[in-house]
Image (tube, rainbow, N blue to C red; front, side, top):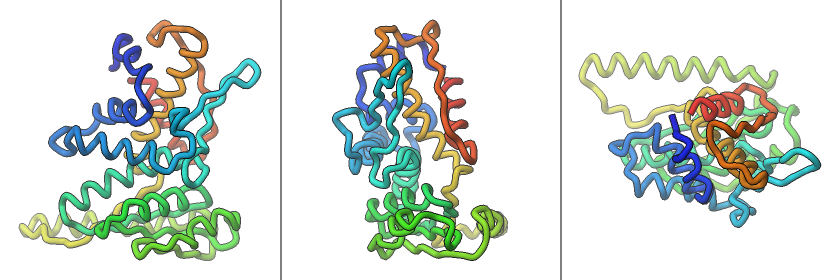
Length: 256
């Protein structure tokens, strides 16, 4: 739990610094050092955003409500706020362990471009991605956001079917990988040179990183209302959600 004094101390932090404080509570310094985590947060929540002077996520009054603008990332979608963070973390681990990692994603529009751009931007030879999208069911703009990225670490594949039809094949691949790894460990063989990792909304790293913009929005609204952040100041946040990832992030932030 974050105390009211701690929450109040967060009010003066930049978005990357706030991200560091929130994420640090979930990641051991033995896994990611303080310096490395600060670099990851800076790269994830500053570089590539067109509103860094407004804290990455401007919170603007519109009539009697406030709107958090989550579209200032490189792909103009709020998915940048979760995807860039989790992919930069995975990039860190793949480089640290010298183990190639192939990310798998299925997209109906927003997830794919955010993931593709984050992987390409990582410039990590250990990290690649394969993104699948249903042919004819995403906008031309979103398709071009993926297919025009020039990176040897990115592959984009269309398929015939509905938007959720790739979920089962990807899950089966990840389940089979886990089974194989368990067999290898039982034999004392841990030399697999490549691992697969899904980065759709079931990846806990996504809501973990998305918690930050909920904290940020809460603090900015308190600031504009002239109220002190803490248990006595309640802000209702209304969100759109599809696979419940963004809602999960908000619920996690609320419980902190």
